[in-house]
Length: 182
Image 1 (cartoon, rainbow, N blue to C red):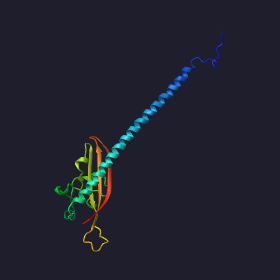
Image 2 (cartoon, rainbow, N blue to C red):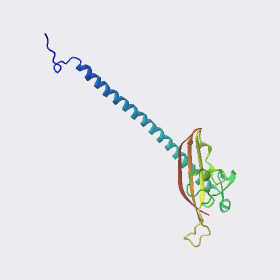
Image 3 (cartoon, rainbow, N blue to C red):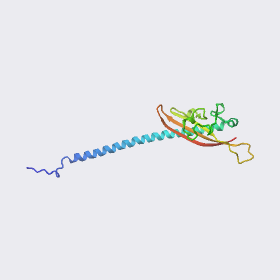
Image 4 (tube, helix red, strand yellow):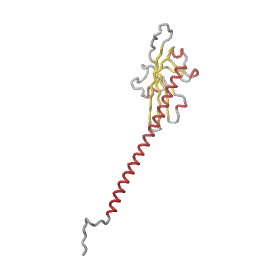
């Protein structure tokens, strides 16, 4: 009769070891796939943010250009022309006229008629909405007592929103200080 010693019997050991190695390799593969998926989401969000940032910055530059190109008499009347000399006059906003001066991101501040204007069409591609909002501060004097002009300060906000039909994917607001003497 043959005696069986369970500790000395190695039949099937390689099968158990290979199953353990296979399970570990599967877990590593699943973790790598999840990490890659998350990295793709992060890079997509970063791309949307960068695009929004550059469009908001371009909207601010369009706003500064609108202030710079507006005639002094139009600016002194508290208006500006968003599209050069041929555009309609838009009333310059002041902090007192803004619906919500505490939260500049409030959509009411960006509504047509509050003082904001659409950025040029090149900035508002499909899904993106770019606007600028110049806000005039009270005029300040000049250190030069012989000057017949004053320095006017503006805060120009640019906002770009990326949205689909169902949800907003991102929003960026850029704020720039601007001074003009007239």
